[in-house]
Amino acid sequence: MTSNTSSSSSTLSSSSKSDRKFRFPFTLPEFGYHFNTLGELRKIDSDERFKFNVHPTDKDYNEAHYESLGAVIDKHIEDRLERDVGLLRMQIPVDDRENEAKSKIFMSKDALTSTKPLLVLVPGRHRRFVSSVPNLSYSPPSNYGTTSIGQWARRIIINDNINIGAMLEYLKQANEEGYDVLLTNPNENTGRLSGILKWIRGNETPSNHLLYVWDSILKKVNKPIVFVAHSAGGIAVFNLFKERPDETMARVKGIALTDSLHDATVITWQRVRRWFAKKATNWVPSPLPVNTLITRGITSKCGCPCRAAGHTEHAYTTVTAKEAVFAFLEDMIKSKEEAGEEIEIHGREE
Image (cartoon, rainbow, N blue to C red; front, side, top):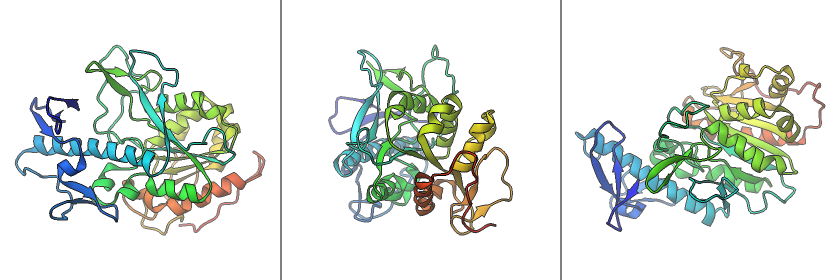
């Protein structure tokens, strides 16, 4: 999104191959929308739900309208993370240099100093991401279409409820259960300098981002650390353990995955794979009751127990598995077993 001379609108290039440009507002009220007290996105004047086909015969306009509204919602959520949840925004890279693109993460005010366990949230990615080893000589891609910080699924935010589509319900329960939180931002890999897209140093891909956050922040924290990672976020988590096996296994107490896209076979060290088999669980789409142990159709790529998320749609697995996720993480933090001991698996089996 780039500014123009109007104070109440923005210009967005369509996400299609068209060169057409459109003007859209900067705020939700100017779009004609608000989130009601239930967290639903509604039209201010008619209380109607969002409709993608604003102009039924103009695909380019509808896509550009959706992306621009999504960008406004991104800003709305970031504001709420600071104002309502009380999180702090931290700039990354943490060593500030002039004339370079920057990103951010959010965390609890005392996340780095308190003795509370630290819950690290890693979202997925709406579209396919660039190579894990990007060619930095190429022009970097835009971040449009990716899942932004503080969100699980934009589609749920827009079509269902912001409280569950964003991370707000997780943050509420984390606070109630005595966690500090850190919200990663794996999909903001580029930023604009003088209108030109630039790679964000050390954060060029989701996997690079999580490595950077670990090296710069997490490995210095003297407290229990647990992860919740959705979809492609699981790939970044597995890459972190592949690249920093000793540090992560010593510090991380448990990993809750929701329909993760990871491939555990990329980790060749057997002790790391044994750690995952004991300390991680993946909640997958299933019509079975939440937390039912799934054994059919599970391959070696999972590398850990798989359980029913209680929903058949990928995007909702984090939402419906929330109570099971927090119960699992509590068990992992309290667990005192040695690395070689077996962990008893609880729950129903399919």
